Image (cartoon, rainbow, N blue to C red; front, side):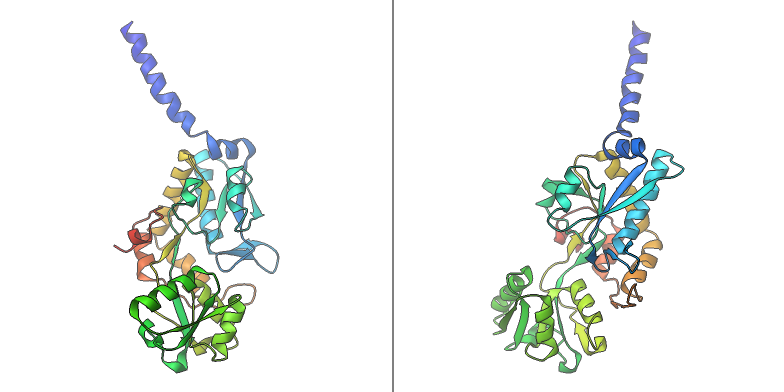
Length: 301
């Protein structure tokens, strides 16, 4: 009986290892020869529609690297790539029910979301900062002492502004805008000395303004930088392993510099806007040490 039992042990070891490559999303892709990328139609420059109604952006480019890795993993000569628009409210349900296989946008990776979905290695870090008029020479949070500062009503940015204002006893007069357009107008017209928002969104707002050269974004932040990640299904270890290997390889290579500069430091379609957002030290560190951690503090080592 010794030889058959040994042979049985080999079978039990090898068969599940092979089967694990063909479960979940990998099995779905293999059987259909199709992978579906979810994207947001106006999340510039992460994912959005260009002039030809094609999905493009920084996160879309990263997703295509994952697609290439899936093709290699499954030894496919070709693979149909479909794109499907998602919104902030439906992207998680569409991921969970199998409609999309990757969500390629600016989705914050946090502990609450990780209870429902998974993320591959973080591809961006965004912190709350302020924009100010360059002529006012306001470059640090302490320079806002006693001044009117705007943020969108009910936003996390407003909460963080109020927290720092109280902690530092700055006497800032917080102004609540109904939306981002109104907030930037208040900064532009001088009703507010500064505008508090996620730094990447500030860069987009400034690039779209009448005179982008007239504004600065603070180096100092109101918060730790929160990670953005490509979203995928939870408990799909084989597919996540492929995505993690692909992104880690990209982030540790010169290729990520090329992709980053294409979308954040160069004119982007369709209107040739340049967001002039150099890679931060904390993001560069995140690329050097790829991680799917939802904890902002883990990236500041």
